[in-house]
Length: 269
Image (cartoon, rainbow, N blue to C red; front, top):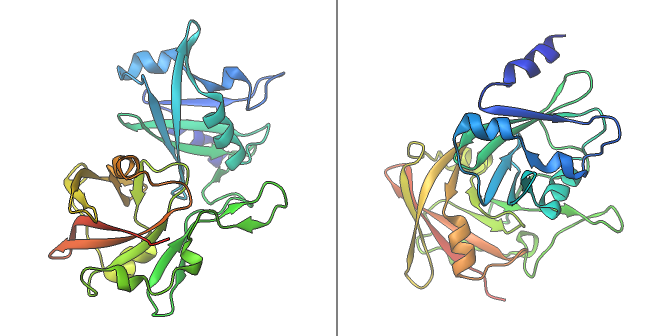
């Protein structure tokens, strides 16, 4: 009962929920619509895309497509979100609007209990330790054919040797990042923050990315579930044609102990 009350408390004017009715499944077209009542109440213009984040820091970018019946998330993106979260017939989703296109998604089971960690079979971004003792990150995704967990991409963190050699300043904090499908934000994991004692600017404060050719890309500091991320990462990936599975080394440039910029190093093939 307490859990059910918590689920109801999550609903507000800036939220909407989704659950299955008889004859529906999570991949039904009706489940992909953004409710008209919600659109009217928020006065936001979600014309192109939305970004869903969950408590274990995974996120998905879903493109939108209007038709005469309303505004819909495109099938490929929504189906991926459904599959990645192993949604069941008795689950309830609560979508809370946070900022512009960004939503926090909470998943509740039949008994009202909220899921706060990655479902079995879905691995969030993980940290591993290099030979030098520094923490680096590796992304894994279960193989659809065998159920085994495999690392995607041309060069992964698993076989990245001595990432420190890419740093401009060996004393700077850093982590290695393997790109996945959704690359709109550069997330900074809690182990990295704790290891280096990093601090970050306020929400929506300016920062920038420094690329190997010396160019800079403007970004913003964002917070989701209390953890920092950097908006502008999608522009870096697009401008430099970074693909799923590519690995980069992200070196933090600090002002005092506050992250002011992220220097991005591309790995050699």
